[in-house]
Amino acid sequence: MKKVAFYTLGCKLNFSETSAISRLFEEEGYEKVQFEETPDIFVINTCSVTENADKKCKQIVKSAKKISPESFVVIIGCFAQLKPKEISEIKGVDAVLGAAEKFKLLEHLKAFEKTKETIVCASEISNATEFNNAYSKADRTRTFLKVQDGCNYGCAFCTIPLARGKSRSDAIENIIASAKEIAASGVKEVVLTGVNIGDFGIQEGRRKEKFLDLIKALDEIEGIERFRISSIEPNLLSNSIIEFVAQSKKFVPHFHIPLQSGSDKILKLMNRRYLSGLYVERVEKIKSLMPDACIGVDVITGFPGESHEDFLDTYNFINELDVSYLHVFTYSERDNTQAIEMENPVPYTERQERSKMLRILSEKKKRAFYLSQEGTTMEALMEGDIKDGLMHGFTANYIKVEFPHDEDLVNQLLPVKLETTTENLTMAVKELKEINA
Image 1 (cartoon, rainbow, N blue to C red):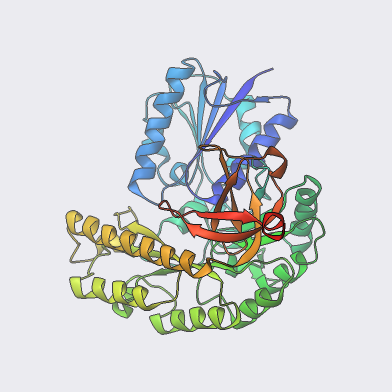
Image 2 (cartoon, one colour; image 1 turned 60 degrees about the vertical axis):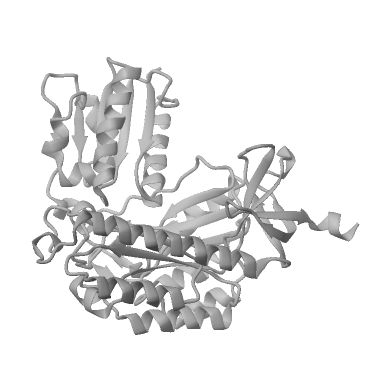
């Protein structure tokens, strides 16, 4: 029995796809093993959102060849689609598969033999038209369920449309079938993922269904306790979606809404499909219906043309918003994007300083959100990790809690009272049955 190991870089969508591909290997009789267990085949699923992800790919290949020098190393994912030739020149790489080929990896491997030349199977991105169903199975408590792929937007900084192709989705009935499989496995929480999930519903090049219809259907699935929306564009997060989540049985009060900049000037340069005023409306709508909702924000700093005043506009805009945390990205030049041709690049040291300020702001926002929740009671879905005798879990509104380890509580919804915010931004809690005793 041949052994295969997987390594995933990047987003939740990549994790769902790696898991789906690994199951295809297991169905063909391969033994799935950990990276360190001298596998015969390494499959590395790559990201190319930032420059660091590219460098990380090279490091992982080097580690793989140290572990198993005679192994066959395959690179798939976004980096593989964008720069197949560059990857083929990395020492130790045996094969590179693009977006249209990665789910056919097993078919390709039957014809692959180790040669001096790296095998490259990466066709034009226009060939990536199929939607390949995927969901993760590595975690006992939560699953990432892919509902959409690709993107029809043209943001000036982004390579994802070049790496994943046009927006496309599975039919609702197929996603429901996957959700029922997940429910049968005992998983309690499902995170909906994709490139641009608010654009859900495009099949065979035309829109057939809507995201709102999808979440209404998922809300009726028995066995899943929680559904979480991973990230959704502000222009696609309609009032109808917000209103449905506010009264739904299973969708949790947690939204992750990309902002990228609080400066309308920069939003226009980025080719974003909204201005800051719409973002404010979305946040206010959520908080009016779900005062305890957690709202995460993506922000990019150091975009070409971003002056110090533009940055301060973003900083002050976010500072005044009722949001809970930030994901901060330092702008990095990516080939074949509009932004790389733009004038007035921001010096790298200035980008770093701005990112540092926003990360400090994120910690301030998160701490304020946690403090606002102290004394409240809710349920936390407990996970299997152990650190210093404590296990962790998350509330519906994404507050991380810690509790004395008890293996019987893993994958259980534990009623708790949120007590104290710790230094590392975790909530110490008491189990409700202790409080009532």
